[in-house]
Length: 186
Image 1 (tube, rainbow, N blue to C red):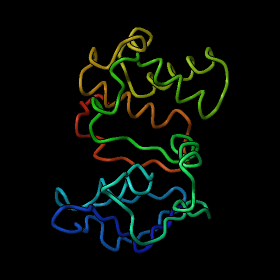
Image 2 (spheres, rainbow, N blue to C red):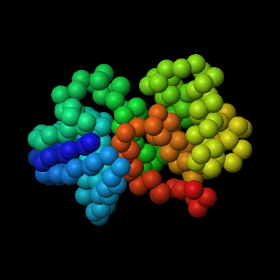
Image 3 (cartoon, rainbow, N blue to C red):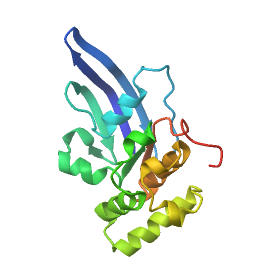
Image 4 (cartoon, rainbow, N blue to C red):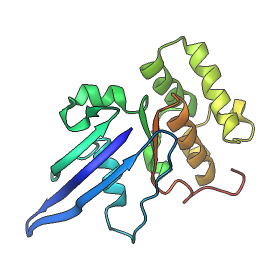
């Protein structure tokens, strides 16, 4: 499903290139779970962001191949990657408070993701959003769905991020420290 071969992601600095991801190679088959383990700053998060092509100058992929379901991700346009992200490949980001948009309610954000990738009516998207919040054990989900991120605890924000990542039932889920802010109810 996902084949990463000899991935090199470098960060350009005034002092030269930092080889943040240096020759990473792995394969993930459908139904398989793979964990990247390493010390802080070793490139785990940058590997995940590289796969989704969510990196920008001065960070660049300088070498390697990333093939998802037979398609080279490095050949995809920005618009093609936008369509792929969330629908086929999704990510639970490390810091949910920074990943959620503070000016939109939880329902606005979940509905937007659902309708962008799967279409459907706003009512259908709302129903699916509520279903996902219940699935991740958000208490009083029908009330919390109308909340803004700052009105939720860190653990609840993390569960919202999990719901967002799963709402379109992606083929590949990338989880970057998904339990960091999570409370014990999930």
